[in-house]
Each structure stands twice: as C-alpha cells, then as structure tokens.
Image 1 (cartoon, rainbow, N blue to C red):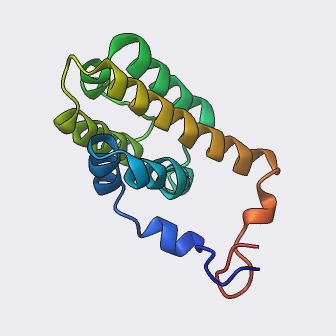
Image 2 (image 1 turned 180 degrees about the vertical axis):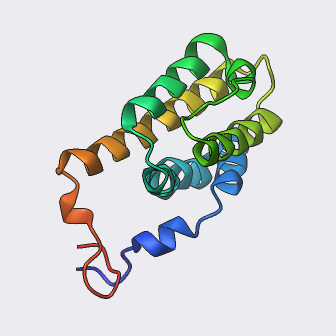
Length: 140
C-alpha cells in the first residue's frame, strides 16, 4: 500500500463546495481534484445518508436536460432531508460560479454528479469492497 493513499476519513473531511467552486472556475489540477477525490468524497457523503446511485444519476440528468438552475429549484434534489440539504449546497455552489449561458460548465456539473453516482454504484456492487477501510482507517 502506498503511504500517500487517502483514507475515507480524510476524503469525508474535504470541502466539496470549495472543490466545486475551484474545479469549475480554474480547471486543470482543480478540476482533476473535483472529479477525483471530490467525487469519491461526495459519494461517501451521500452513501452515509442512504442515497442510492440511481438518485444521484437522476440528478445528473436533471442538470443535463433542464439546466443547473432548474436543479437548484428542485424541492428535494436527493431523497431525504439531510441528503436534499447536501445536494442543495452543492448545486447552489455550482450555480454561483457557472453563468446561465455557460453550457460547457453545466455539462461538467452533470458529469461530476455522474462520477459521484458511478463511485457510489461501485461501492454498492461489491466491486468497490476492496476500498473498505482496513483496521487503522486506511483504504485497502
């Protein structure tokens, strides 16, 4: 195991709105962090809240088909009060830095939610079971 591997606890501590803000506006390494550690951190967050991958994938489709502002206006973007508040925070952060006419970055938001759903699906399928924390909190 590499000593620079990130634990689930470290990922859960990441500031996802900050990753969204910088990943969508600055690109480059910031976008890589958003789609890498940020997507895994978001998947861990919603997994703890009992959200299924299909709910996150559906939210990605809403962003893609109806736009980011429409997704922000959803009464419950993810099922459950805490999950809804979490998704609202992410959507609001993204909409604060993505202009209404910026279809490229709206697509990036949709793709990010798809990445979150994919990570969540892997964890649910058992294919990601090797990623479960080992004793000591390190991912295996």
